[in-house]
Length: 258
Image (cartoon, rainbow, N blue to C red):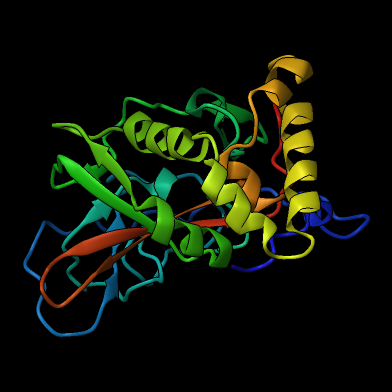
């Protein structure tokens, strides 16, 4: 059991400020249609983008629109995620979707080219071709270990939307910590103090009353310390055509518009 992330790194080093996402260059081609995957290497897959140009002052891209990592133009991809769900292809350190995972999906925001924080269309389709089930794991070192105990995040709906995906992540991380999980956590020196401070910070940042939040006890999200900024989902397909989404998180801050 590793030591929990230190909550003090939630806002980075002193003087650190949030950098707004870089706007994507104009789309140079529509997303490719679904095709079967061949070969034995896992592949990171694309998102789709509109067929009309997007506002930007940068030259046209030389990669498939929305892919992460970027794929050369003309490469066929078998699965498309909505671009709000994937890491920023121009700068993975700056998320496209601004979301602190302690808050419900309704509070997620998109940073526009006019320097505005805008609501997310949560009814937008999350994946195409249409999928009725998504399997989400994580490459975050602490969360990945705990997910071996908790299991994956499962998203089920006949036609999955952004709301379905974000809500599944939110509810998964809001599950109460079980007594046996707390005992395992406390077996590492320093973890108990870290999770207590993480819960305090979550209650401070919550829109609910501080006392009410603290009385509800420890939640799964508290094991992440200050690593609460949603960085995107990275799709990976394997040789047998099965695929997973890997959830990435990092320390904040996450801008608030409310």
